[in-house]
Image 1 (cartoon, helix red, strand yellow):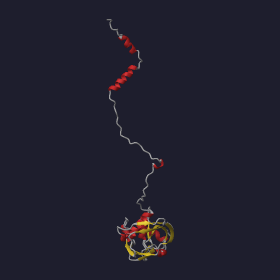
Image 2: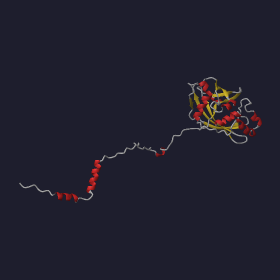
Image 3: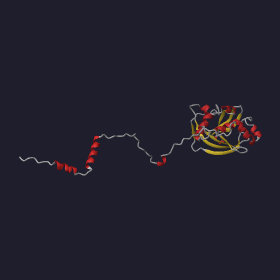
Image 4: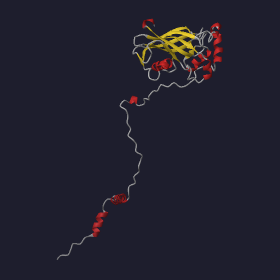
Length: 276
């Protein structure tokens, strides 16, 4: 039997050592990575970003109509307003405010300024500008509701013969003004169950009238009238009367409101539409 071949270990080692120099470092790195556990860092999960198809709408913020509470009245009290008006108005006319039946006094005008319902031009005489909503309420028979007269807090009567009208608040839109006017002047007879207001489409009209104020004699006025036709559910078919609790009930200056002339009762009647 022939002897087994002799393995030349020196030659084998020599071949390994003759490999490129980077082999052993690479093998060491491999062994190091396989023997150590990888350190995994966890990061908070970030939701994917999404963008709208129309990029111009991406930064659009919903607009909310908001009228900040402010005091636009440049006069600190009715007395200062009175001092400002006296040299600018005929003395006999100004003296009749709140004295002549059906007129209001300087406390009323001061409250209107404080509520933002009225503005006064700095002129001689001053010009009072008022935005007014006028609602032509149409009955089932086609007739129109008119306010014939008012009973004031001082016991006097003021003739009206006009549709439901109300001074608009600053920043108030037409629909809100119409509903508020109906609620304030007709609410006592409509109650909680009635009073659904429907504005006739396409009935809006705008008109500017300039005349001397009936409430404030001698004071020129510019009325910007915003008129609509409307149906109101729950109204009586015949003549009727409504009561107004407090004209300036939501006013912060109760002491001054108590000195103003307010409307206590409204008297209403139905008339043929061609007479309006």
